[in-house]
Length: 118
Length: 118
DNA sequence: ATTAGTGTATTATGCCTCTAATACACTAAT
DNA sequence: ATTAGTGTATTAGAGGCATAATACACTAAT
Image (cartoon, rainbow over all chains, first blue to last red; front, side, top):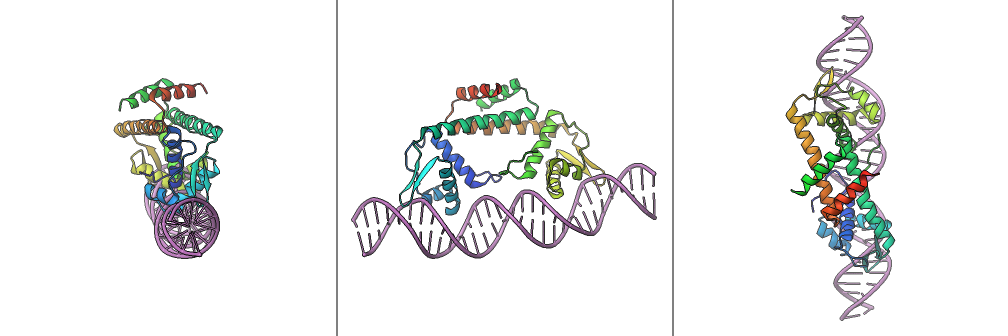
C-alpha cells in the first residue's frame, strides 16, 4: 500500500478498511485478518496496526474478541451511517476545495467528466 | 482559519494561498502581507508561516525579496501549471476515493449534484 | 496441560511538526 | 546615520506518529 506521508498511517489504514466494507470486499460479520497479518499486509508496525483497529472498534465499524479476532459489525445503522459519512463528507470537502479555487459548479462538472475519461 | 489536525499546518496554509491565487483573490505580481502579518492572520507561529512561504517560493508560486516582501509570481506557465495541478490532482484523488468505496461513475455524479444543492 | 494463534500493553527511540524566543540581514523612509 | 519594517536563521522544547522489542492475556485445538 502507498501511504500519503502527510496523513497518519493509522488513519489511512482505517480509511482503507472502511472502503472495503462499503465496497463489499468485506461483508457484515466477516472476520478480518489478525492484527499481525494485517500489519504485514499493510507493511506497518504491529502497534500502528493495533492503533488502527482499536480506533475502528471505537467507531463501531469492527468488533473485537480477545484471543479470536476482529469482525465487521453487523449493525446496519452503523454501516449506513458510515456510507453517508464517507460519501457526503468527501463530496462536501471536494466541492469546498473546488469552489475556493474559484471554480463554478459547471466547471466542476466538466472537470469530473474529464476525470472519468482518464 | 480552521486547521485540519491531521495535516501539517504549513501545508494547509500553502493550499489556502494557492487557492487565493487561483480564485483571483491574489493577482499575479501582487504583494502578500509580511510573514509576521500572515502569521498573525493565520494564527500560527512565525516559523510555521516562514516554512509555508519558503516552500511556496521553492515551488515558484511566490517570489521573495529580502527586506521588502513576497510577491505572487508573474510567470504564467507556473500559474497555469498550478491550476492544472490543483484541479486535476484533486479530481483524481476524489474519483479514486469514490470508486474504491464502490461507487459507479453515475453514482458519483448523483452525489455531486446532491452536494450542489446543500 | 500444552501449544499455536489470537488481541493487548509497555517501554524506549527517532523523526517531524509546531511553538517560543532571540538574533541577524536587508531595504526604504526619515 | 537612524529607524521601522521587512525576510531569514538558530536553538530549545513539547507533542504526536511510527518503529522496535518484549511481555502478557485469552481462546481454541491438540
